Amino acid sequence: MLRIPARVLAVILFLSAQAALAEGHGAQEGVAPDAALKMLRDGNQRYATSAVNPRHYRAERPKLTKGQKPYAIVLSCADSRVPPEIVFDESLGRLFVIRVAGNVAGPGEIASIEYAAEHVGARLLLVLGHASCGGVAAAMSPEDPTPNLAALLKEIRPAVDTARAKGVDKDHLAAEAVKENVRLQLKNVTERSELLKKMAAEGHVGTAGAVYDLASGKVEWLAP
Ligand SMILES: [Zn+2]
Image 1: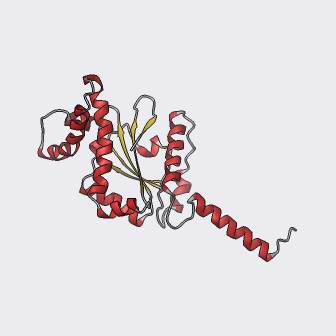
Image 2: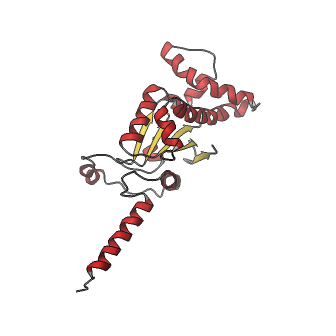
Image 3: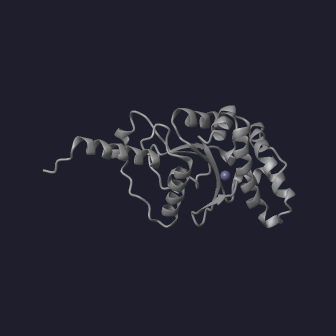
């Protein structure tokens, strides 16, 4: 049997621990924002090309009973065609997902993001919009069908105004408004949360914006 001297073994264990920390796995502070972004990119690539990982939910559930350690927070639209766990080929316990029509960052959504960043260690926030978003389309109309919808659309309308101010032609206005809405909600998250503003400034939490295409299944990553 191969015998490894204790001192050599200690060095090997130390280096393994360092490698794990560098990768962001097993580190107390969670997966680094850059690494988390790459995991989302790779997952969407698998989903869009039908090379998805097999899932074993029954085997996974017992491992998650003592806690959760999702590597990313996703604020996405409630649209039934855009489920983040599927779009990023992820499983239980991997993504902390908040869904609301138009992916707006109101108090409830921001409180959820704060919780995920401060207490469960997720270090990347992705705001995910999508093509043909009903919430954004409704915000392009001046009508407010109900008081509740009015409150929601009020959050999206500044993005529609920004898209219009860019002089985009009528056919592309909705798509541009979807992108601007992602940027607006990202801005709102940090402007409306001292905690997240601080965590972002310290580099502890990173942010990203993206738009999902219903037909191709691909996510277009937006420049900040
Ligand atoms: Zn939508």
